[in-house]
Image 1 (cartoon, one colour):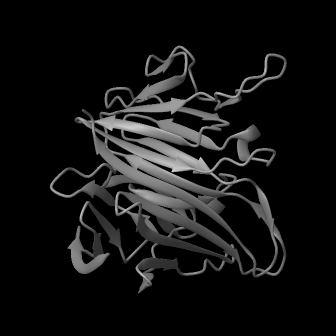
Image 2 (cartoon, one colour; image 1 turned 60 degrees about the vertical axis):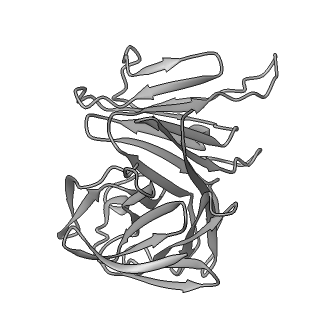
Length: 278
């Protein structure tokens, strides 16, 4: 792992690279990964998204890229501004990113980033630590905004049971089930990001297969995670959620809901890769 200081959109940032991949991580807000790409290729992540929301006498900015949230989504807690500088440390070939503890939630957010599988996979560990005065109940939530114009694919569970339900779906109030961006097939469903469709669409599922992909410009981005059977997941059992509108498509993974004791933490791991489609 090689790290170098760079300027990214007039802010301090670091470039993280190995022989295959290159990441850009801003240091003046976050925690965010704003670029993930194969070397000499394009950034798979959506960036420079100007959406913002006023909160706590400041602005929370969407910005883009990959971020760490914690469930449930609720204003103002999830939209508290994250405009403070990020601390980073390289140790044992792992990059540790730490966000300033939010005084309203007393939650510390961290990411630990490393290359595995001979450098072909990026491993991201998301950590939420409770530094408050009482236990909290939440789940870690990894949200990745992808570059516009691609198609996401989400596998349907392969588990067989002819008497009980094996596939669970959650829909948000603004969803239109006739939306032509979503297409169900035998073993998966796809969602197309359409810059001309301004409607919001979000679907969640108990993704037991533990991955989703996004195809764009002859390449495929894969985001994998662990599914834990018999655990309680947010939003009526969702380990995975997908949101899209005219500006973004998000692949979102969630950990099981856990009660975090004071000074304790939860961890949620994703594994990313990019490969050219043959």
